[in-house]
Image (cartoon, rainbow, N blue to C red; front, side):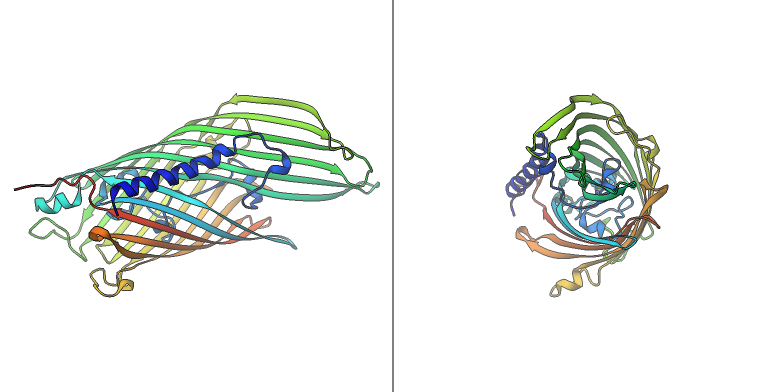
Length: 455
């Protein structure tokens, strides 16, 4: 696999993903709103929040603040970019099945999406390090990634019988869209301390509509209200990691299979400005001719807002090439959130997760399953949104496996699989029981920044 091939693949995939929100920027009608999913709670806030964890981390419950891996990129803490030993292109997709229930009402929904596109590389080539035959005290890695941040998708119909006249009123709520993050990060290591920083560009659009019709009255007009809101903002993320070795390196200064270490991780994201551009159309529609009578219309109204700050802690115990056990806690201050285009009050969100990874025999030559990475994780999160006075929660478990594959130049790459099962909602209200499958490629190349030497 050549470096040029990796670049072309990344560019093509990036253009495809960037094309989706651009296509959604045109004015749509209520009939044209086609949600990819049916998640009723996504009409609140910016939508359903999505993790930036890659498939390898998703299989471990989404942990990553205190993880370092030379073969996998980790965007949960930019400081971990300093641990990269190879150039890595990572692409991931997901498919989800949701069973919705509230009282005696039940429904099911399927959805899928591109989840991640990442290209990251070390500026100190691992081959050069091996040829130098000495331990380096300084490493530097950087990369780019594109991933969805929030998702909006719902299609709800409510039929109500009003008063003594028994008028039947049908209300239809629809929404689609979401936001994305395009990030650029750097991580550097000096001895046992690593620090990193990432700048993220947030962009996207959501469309929300509400239509009301009086079904029991002949020739009654229906009303339709539609909001189109585009978002943009710039987010900064800082990270740090400290690596504590329990065992000494060999005579070449290299740590070997089974050597034990402890990693402490910290991330901080200050709050950021959010800018929205909104259009609102309110109209009355005739049931006979379908002619729309515009009641009010406002276009390209720019408003301000604030995105929340976030603080995360993590700890990982590692036996090199054998075992990883990691735990982390993240708090996001959504009570700082403001959106003048869609005024809402949200609560602070918290997430705690635990994960482990096990490799039976990383040095096995003839058994790929012995060299595979088996993963397990559990998580519990409080969502910033509430329903009927109850804050939403999301909890579940995950399983994963990283299957090693050897491509040209004998660089180890991976096919990563993860399966999540969980429950999202409130104790007494609408609940979503879901199963989500993640599939990703980690394509690695060790030839970047290789300095050839001639005698």
